[in-house]
Length: 390
Image (cartoon, rainbow, N blue to C red):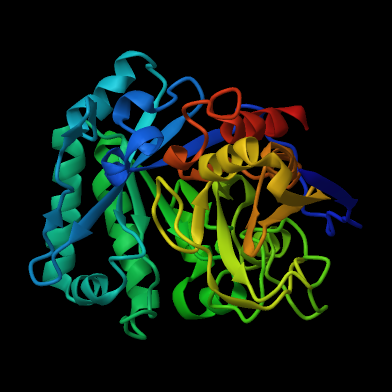
């Protein structure tokens, strides 16, 4: 295994930093479908690290665009591992401080149903009522709204305004029992211009989960890492696709730093290189990297798929770590850009320095939860250590 570490010229850039408590939130999104994976990839409620996560977000509810109804995931058990809501809520018996939220939406849901509901007063009222009743009857502590994204992907121009209306009405409905209300949001200025009235959302949301990942992928023309903290060394000066810029964009548009939660990806984006003549960021590629053995999705490798392959095929990998920002590696023409515990720790330190409310993981089931490569949950543990070290 060839490992190269580069020290980037890094700068926190700005006077926005503030001190916050070391007890920042650690939000762990949980994909309920992960118990359908095979072998070492199968993840159930019993695998959730209640000693590490302060908040677990059960993902995802869907919605009926005709009625404003709620569509809950199918509850299943495979090889003794479940995704059931009852088992999930029972985790609070082992940690009384644990908060468990349910998320609605996600990438697959898109905007069409959201748009139909939020732009109709009757449907929106039914939707709010249905969400409240689902949370209340199942024992959840709150809701995460993961609409990707208002006024985009099948949405309407009115979504931006009506998204605020929805959030306001949810906040009012939740007030009686102090249920938490959060939202997962996109992180570029162009997304904000289309989708978010930041100052108004900031007024009603308890936390704003920044999806500071998926900044590069096979939709680009060259290779790029999933979530560089700062600009990639190969980026043109006009490129602003990095975590640092995203945080400043939300703050500059009116978000309270302590309400922002920094998203951390427990996975990498993969590519198939055109040749071995260029294996850096900004290299030409022919398509997505092949699917991994557990997540089984082309273009994506979970952290445990990355570290396991590097452990057992060490001599075949060339790994470059740009200190405090990102990692990329290749095994022949297979290329992946990702985070390791070092870069996750640096990002969490950055979150603390910027006065953010904590860190968030997409997703808990993509970290090395079995300890295939060492200690269990190395990324979540590194993030906690980083946030608490500043």
